Image (tube, rainbow, N blue to C red; front, side, top):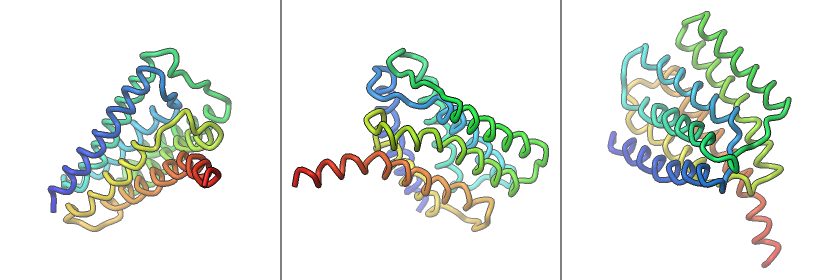
Length: 194
């Protein structure tokens, strides 16, 4: 069943690389606060789980932080990709960073994952708010790929514990919520035309 995580990784790359390209050409405008912290929090989740030993169920989290880091870097390559950072974004970012600092002080893997999830939630809020107000500045595909990628990790898990399950479950939920927020306006438009 480990082949499923490679399929998930491939799906994630197939949808995230075009999103990165859309960022470079200015078709989407990612929130830099979200994408930076989305790179850091999964990295912490990955390395915290790795501290208990490697299993292939961690591979989707590795792909998650790699692709988010790519998109964050791409957001600096075109001025049209700029999204104004507001006070709310900064507050969410600071709370997210505080959660990461608390993790750094504890060094307990389960606690680290809890704080990594809290940090990631705080990083997601600015993008959820932006996508709710301006869905045209986002595309749904990388978030659906994120759900699929995180879900494939369950096929390869050999240890079923909080440490190995928490972050993949969280990634499925948050990516699903963001995809639905982006798609809701498109669905309403389609229903209005019927």
